[in-house]
Image 1 (cartoon, rainbow, N blue to C red):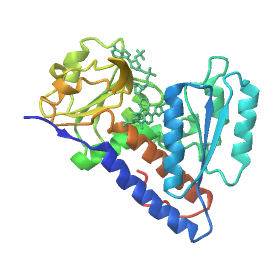
Image 2: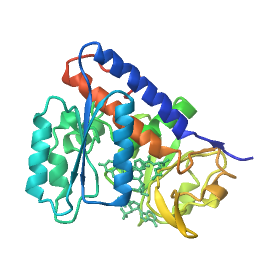
Image 3: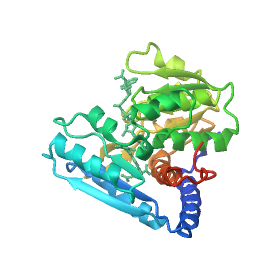
Image 4: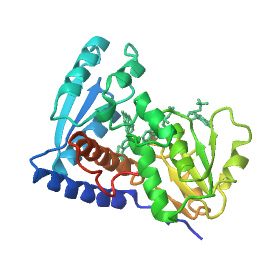
Amino acid sequence: MTADIIDGKAFAATVRARVAEHVSRLASLDITPGLAVVLVGEDPASQVYVRNKGKQTVEVGMASFEHKLDVNTSEADLLALIERLNADPAVHGILCQLPVPDHIDADKVLAAIDPAKDVDGFHISNVGLLATGQKAMVPCTPLGCLMMLRERHGSLSGMNAVVVGRSNIVGKPMAQLLLRDSATVTIAHSRTRDIEALCRTADILIAAVGRPQMITGDWIKPGATVIDVGINRVPNGEKTRLVGDVDFASAVEVAGAITPVPGGVGPMTIACLLANTVTACCRANGLPEPEGLTI
Ligand SMILES: NC(=O)C1=CN([C@@H]2O[C@H](COP(=O)(O)OP(=O)(O)OC[C@H]3O[C@@H](n4cnc5c(N)ncnc54)[C@H](OP(=O)(O)O)[C@@H]3O)[C@@H](O)[C@H]2O)C=CC1
Ligand SMILES: Nc1nc(=O)c2c([nH]1)NC[C@@H]1CN(c3ccc(C(=O)N[C@@H](CCC(=O)O)C(=O)O)cc3)C=[N+]21
């Protein structure tokens, strides 16, 4: 039996349609949600994401502000830009694309973003709010993963979830969200012993490692739901292609459901970024929380 393919691209289109509905409702109040994306340097992969974000932001009727800074931009200049964006009433969401060049302290940059405009959910106050079960800005990638899991399973209560990867931007917040939905959560990383056997205990397996096709079918419990967060560009003849952290061909034979790469978590991440921007805009204007966009 082969796994059901979870179509993140199609799901993301439904999230964007909900976002567009809220945006048009806000337009009748003369409010336009605005998203500012800051990119320092010229990492080609980041440029693709930033372009996609800008395009989709405009498509749902929001304002997009792109700030592309030279790779040699000083930390002080970047912090000054963030201060300006914090103070700008047309900007409801701010995202600084990571990684930033080595001479800039990423933690300092994230701490400078107004938590109310922190649509990435990376500011320590949002991290703390999420960890204590309070209303927060929720990181886009884990939020997108959770939406797909809820759609598939309804309740996650009591399920065994294994998250492979413990980064601040994916692994840790993913674990928080699963715990909040009453899954039994284990976080695995590069020091985990017998990681394959651990993965085989998972009803829900999240791969957020950054190692192309590391997780093969024999790591997966038959019928499990596999969410592949990895985005890895690998050589493919003369060109390159995108693969996940899961070896799709062997995994699809064992899993019950699986997200593909591309077309899985990636599009959901951008849709959730737009959703978070609408949420931030409603909060900034003292309006009720938009329905169906947040958790
Ligand atoms: N689809 C999307 O929207 C997004 C995709 N990504 C992709 O997700 C992947 C992970 O990203 P990110 O979390 O930022 O990556 P990081 O490099 O920050 O973290 C990787 C994690 O994987 C762990 N790890 C590395 N090697 C192994 C191994 N052999 N066995 C077990 N664990 C291992 C590391 O462990 P340790 O801590 O011990 O070093 C670390 O916790 C990347 O491919 C990235 O491109 C990221 C963000 C968004
Ligand atoms: N502050 C910050 N926030 C982020 O959310 C953030 C970041 N920095 N740095 C980089 C990672 C990576 N990331 C992706 C977003 C969309 C796709 C995406 O749309 N992927 C498409 C394919 C895109 C392609 O073809 O290259 C897909 O999987 O189908 C991928 C990866 C967000 N990140």
